[in-house]
Length: 347
Image (cartoon, rainbow, N blue to C red; front, side, top):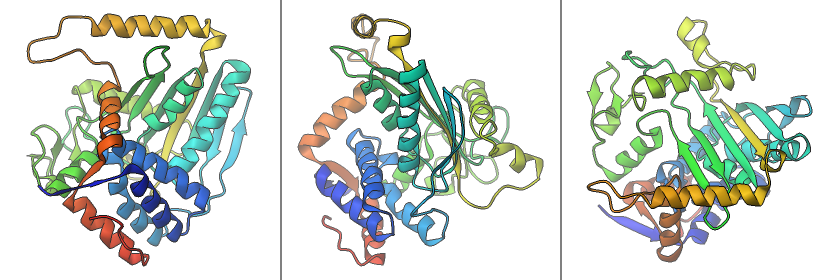
């Protein structure tokens, strides 16, 4: 399989320029480009620049607002409900998390619900913001159904991700970021670009049958059977319904669903200082990390890792040696660039 390695800054500059040519303001384009390349650096290629052609398609179909009117529609001392006006996910979610952090500084917790936005992609990007502010970050997001509930062979829920990040003292923040499906939809897209099959147990085709052909995937499967399924159900209740923008229910009941692409998200921050001394807390997280990593490794494992550690190591390697993109991704980026009269600076 042919790959091209690209310097992170080169990739970020390209992504920002492409987004600007699509009509996004420079500041918004910079935020989205930074998040996309952050995901690629960490090896989460499913949520990286391979999404740029899709973003371009959504803009051209008038699904996304290039200059959204992001509004706070409800607010108390601790909570916010925000209308994202179909703006870029990284832009609207950054707006929400920054304000959640401000709330947490004032009253101990900030909880933002974000409606009428588009996918914020790698939501660990936002919980990391809270951890770097000496807070605990929590984020989750849901969209229209693409996940088969446990025991079903049709989609009824969304495989929306959940992320939690906590700060440490000697160690990097511990960052959990996972979908409620066995694998995120973007990993299916990566398999398409690489020209490989996906593992058995990831997904179903249009008839509800198991498939390993990424081109035939229509429905994702939950991780851990009923566990991922029920977590997805609860995230729907905690985000889109609570924000006044339900997704799964109207689709399943036959009442119809809004045709425009949109998601709902939770962006929350908990101020550690409200509960405990911050330095003591971070030392305890260090102790927990050291204790877990000090356990004997199971057969077939070289070492015990904590959440976010593999991605941190990948980021170090890719920062030095470049980000590898498969030929399928490079080809689609080239096509997207041509549509806005750009030359691909690599590949």
